[in-house]
Length: 322
Image (cartoon, rainbow, N blue to C red; front, top):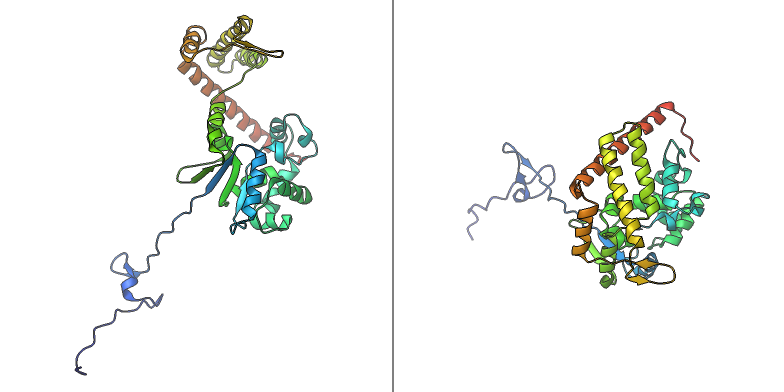
């Protein structure tokens, strides 16, 4: 070997990070800066089950695995999570909770107000439960009662940083629930336990049940809006539609039934005959599209009125937390 031969030049090192010059990406006007690799976002796992009871079974199995300490949450209704001494005994917990949270009616819930401070992180929840493993709803409700923080709103807070989210099917298949719970499934992982039951859940999500008394009450509400000159054209059109709907329901109840038992009777239409009858009786002279537009306008006006009432209540400055 020739000792006078020139050795190959070594790449200059970065004085800032002490990395070989070859690892530095040139950014900007010839300056050498370290460009960090783009961080990939890890998808969440949504694990859907048929019932809340099966969620508890999944949690028990999760505890047996090496992933028992994963950040998790369980989405459940107020029926299973409310700890308010009055609302928890109510027949309609959802509506009564919403009324309690409304400044004009209830003034707020002290248990919900404590969530941000006491049960908004996985670390604090595990500390109150007394375990660093997966937990079930019963343990969360017990911890919520101990620290006086709402388990229902705690599960929603924990969802934001959870790696796995357990919930019944309807939280995943019903668009209205997904929207209210801010569940976005794009690029996420969805696992369905006993997936052969998903057809029934999807069918139920696309179905509706209406009582004649409910239709009559809605008709009267629309007529009152017309009397007070609040979007009279919109509410008048909805009132006319509801009148036709109530008449059709009453007539259908009196017609011959296809199935009957001791407590109820059922009339069944095929898709073709049912749509033909609706288009002839319900959606005439206004079409389904016309009714849908009127309903959207009415709901938009109602939302604006609620926001205005909430702002007026906030200006008064006397919010009482119960």
